[in-house]
Amino acid sequence: MSDIKGAAAVVVSLFTVMVFAGACTGSSSLPSTPAGSSVPGQSGAPVTSESPPAEETPEPGESVDPDGSVPPDGSPTPEESLPPEESFPPEGTPPPEETPPAEETPEPTPAGGTAACTGTAANRTFFQEIAGTVDWDVYCAVLPARWHIDSDPSKNTFSLAGGGRMQIAYVGPGGARLTLQQGSFCTAGVSACSPRDQTIGDASFGDRTGTLVTLGPDKGFALYVDSGQAPSWALTGTGMDQATFVALAAALHRIELAEP
Image (cartoon, rainbow, N blue to C red):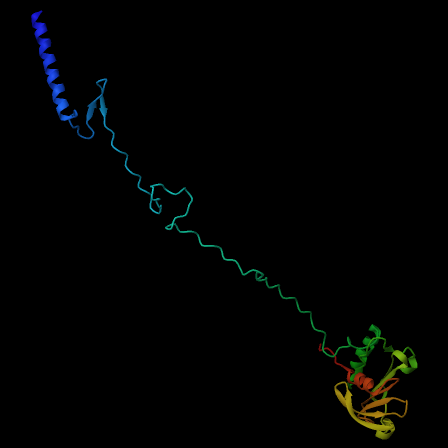
């Protein structure tokens, strides 16, 4: 029993010395522990010292704010390549239009046909038949609206005798009249075949040139081509002024046969 009491006294003495020594130094220190080594806990279980987490390394192309934060996803950074913007035409400029397909060109009417001639379809067929029968140029009148071929059959005649001849009469508005003669209708000479009051000068007879004359006061005008010969051509007109007559004479149309 005395031995136990002596041992306890020794322990108390040692504890007192340790406390006194700690007071002199101002603090107690634990032995340094290497990083990562175990430090005994209160329960006696080893506790591992934690290393500070490694800083996140930003992905290439990301910019880090001064406080270490990364911009929200989807925010473009200076290094990001944005897709090129779509190019639009200037405002108000319509897109180029598609070129429409070329229209088919209708077959041309044979040059010099009777389509332009004043009259009915039957009249034009008649002109075509005459042009194919005689050996001289056949003309028809191309007149404005309200003109037509005279319905009096005595004013419209045709004959193949002596090389052929034809006369066609036209009636217009206000009592205006035209008479077209062609072929061998007069072969008695110039004076007999081209009556006149005064000679005015040259004028166009379709694609030919004739002599323009007056027939007397209020009797109209006449235009003669190759008077007194076979063939010859003549146009007379009444109920119109000189300018109108000259214009209608110039519009006379020569009928050409379509080549077979």
